[in-house]
Length: 247
Image 1 (cartoon, one colour):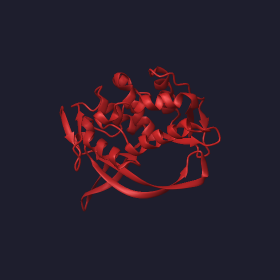
Image 2 (image 1 turned 180 degrees about the horizontal axis):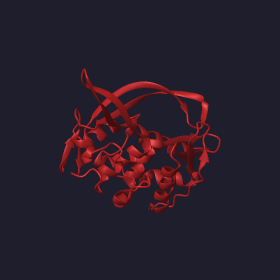
Image 3 (image 1 turned 90 degrees about the horizontal axis):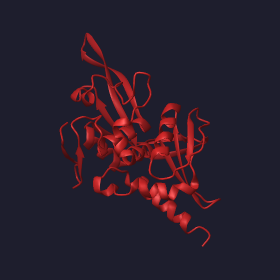
Image 4 (image 1 turned 180 degrees about the vertical axis):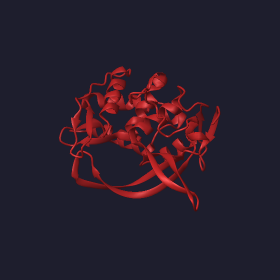
């Protein structure tokens, strides 16, 4: 991967990408936000010969938006697979939802997996803490990737407000996300971390802060293409519903 613009097939959008996948850049910030929010390392056995097997690793990033999946692939390469899945709702496991999922798979053989020798070389330090310092100048794209990776958006009909929450099994990641929100230029108060019924954790953005925060988060995103159109539409539609609530 070099300093260039990757063209998304079937579209005129071009995404600028840096040579170093961990360098401070809007595209890498967006990508690693998605990786932290919905990425996982998958290990599988692959045959080389009849008598020899080796262990392979790959990085998978899941999104429900096809455009976002193609953008992530344009940034780092890899293959995108599509399937329809049903899963439990994080806040209430009695509710299931069916949706399209697009999985970006990056094999270990792909340019030594983003220039690193192992899929485990994610942006974390030796203690396993997330290190997002390289993306401090691109907090908008990083937070956008995190929201699209592990965030939820809903219109609350009972109060006429919009809810944004972040849900993940990794408490440390959510704590790091809270710190990012505290440092962003928009006054974005958040709730304390709570346990979900599925065994993970979640926190919410204060409803009063959502309209300004959401507008800032997606401001200018069309110029770079670093966003999930379906997620932005849902946020904008929910904010519009809140604005017209009670009229």
